[in-house]
Image 1 (cartoon, rainbow, N blue to C red):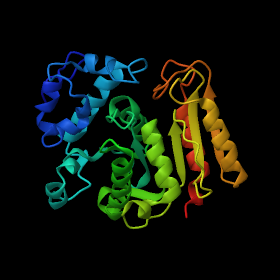
Image 2 (cartoon, rainbow, N blue to C red):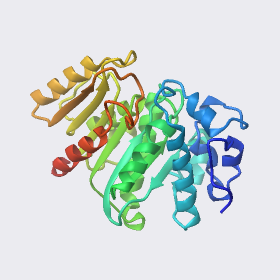
Image 3 (cartoon, rainbow, N blue to C red):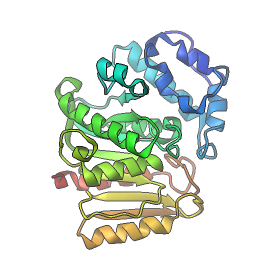
Image 4 (cartoon, rainbow, N blue to C red):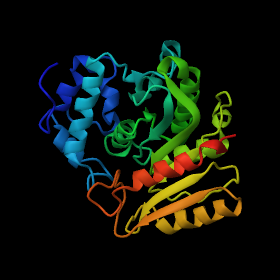
Length: 297
């Protein structure tokens, strides 16, 4: 394996990494059209809506871990659309699942990053979550989707079906799976949890046992939601925490298990909340998920 990635590693070096051949561009927020000479540090500092909380050292550790996993023979990227589908619709070539493998046949989480449906902010909003979940033994997949409410929902629906169809060969347990997301990605997770894969032109699958929603302002409630936990900050100028508190209350009126974690002073896009008041929220979310494993229908 070549030199270990650092804060000064350029995007061009990521693109040319042999272990990432065929999908390197999908590990990075290509819709931002950043210069290939930009470094991982510069990328971390210039993510719209996320740069305040993005930790360069976390970004670097993720790319090093992914390359190590790949060099050890683990398949870390999966296309969710066939070659024929990608040929018919070239936009589907920019989708896929990045796999952070946990314990064999352990539970599965699918994480969708935010980015205001303009880009996929996986570096702050799904890769760190997946890295942490895998450290706890869970099999975690970060969805790289086509920015857009409809296209993103369809890509998440396809990803859910793909993982159900390939669970045995991937050695993952899809019973009681969970959907996670931040900002726009939280909306995708909520919509799929409430409406199901069949609402987005895919075969029906089991409902997730839990939806984890981070810093979004979604108010709609159908009464068909799975157990849902929301994580928000009081200083978020994009997503008002009170909207999620009210949504949590509405879910409870349908006897749906629901919780809302509110952190004083935090703004939008705090990710894992490292070195903030929200540090440790992900452990509370995991506990919520484990408490509701048997609720999927």
